[in-house]
Image 1: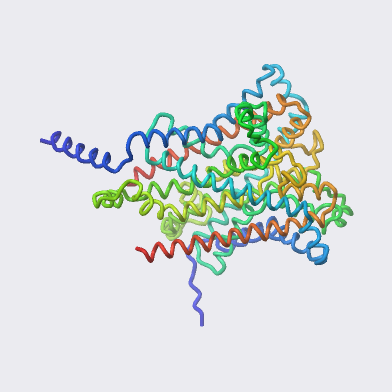
Image 2 (image 1 turned 60 degrees about the horizontal axis):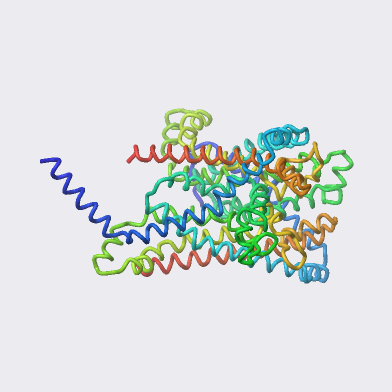
Length: 277
Length: 292
């Protein structure tokens, strides 16, 4: 017989009940609608919608730009985190506080601002024009917007790990004759890798679904700069709910798969780290 | 004697620190790259918002933010935040309480489900409520019979905003409450406190900074949400237009100064959010310092 352990603290039933009810009514049931609606569409139609040339192209754009932006942030976000943790310089505190700006600034505001700055007559765009680099209304512009959105994910995942790394290990390695680069590659980087990967996956997932900051700078030209969320929006505006839902299902499955893959990589990297220790 | 000892200790530690650092120019180059990167991505855009907002002078700015459509957008956005933030705060506290103070089956699943809205595109968040509540949606015919309008109306905007901001408070509270454990609350209960006394006098003082942090992040997102809201709003000027949607409309009408004027109001909100956040971090660091 199972013995029922008495809970000392009050409110278990109330808090769990409220949590489950709230989450079910406002998130889970609405989200399940997407799958229920799609099942009414019929397989042939579903495939036709989600594999049409324009839609396939929008997946490619979304994937490519989200991946590029997350990769850029993995490099520069790591550098920024390193500089903020290891060095001291005037204005560092302001810089550190400003990292979270993309979380606090409405995406539409970010969108119109980046578009204005990077279009050919904008502050930054006009510097790039003589070099024949066009940013606004190209996939490069989408990447810039997604880089803005993704920055805090990487920096905030890496920063605490860098703070916790014990200096003694580095010093020991150095006294054994390791160069600074060797120490970074063999000691610091492996410690940072799990945080870096989860930051990357969060930034990537956010980038796949991002809409507000991208629509302005993308220009939304079919087969050129249309992102997948915009395709859903376009179908909705034509009252093609079935089509919108079909694309949404594909996007949801893709982003869940990404998260699962990233989780597996993390578990694997943690395991291999434990083994090496 | 003492000053001498501390002097030698200082020498040893500074020598140690020096030896485990990069050469000076590597450091300077890295700092330079970081500042350049953040300038291009954060500083210059933030400055540009205000420059563009005041480009045509203060009068144009003032006119843009006091015009009736702008005022009703501001009112609606504030209304949404005033409803959404308390609801999600209540949810966040309840969820964190259940997850951190008790053991039960399916806790891991609940934790993953809590994060679900972050993995969903805002556009899809809007779409699901269209599928549910629009006249052609699942509950549509029933709602039409009773004359209830949710999509292209304020309730839809509120519900969609709740969806995208559900996790904020819970995910800030869970680590804080996990670290605190259950001993203090158990002591309060065994000394005869009832549930509410325990919560107000023991739990709340312990979690107040984490709670405030979650609430300001939730608030920032609720005010700024664009994708989900633009799906369900219908953009009816003066009725279902929130501030971000108003910014979009003005921008698409080439009224750039007016658009950036409204955007600058939201940017001020973002800056205040960052300041409160830094203050909370400073406060909690100080408390931790005291504890050690």
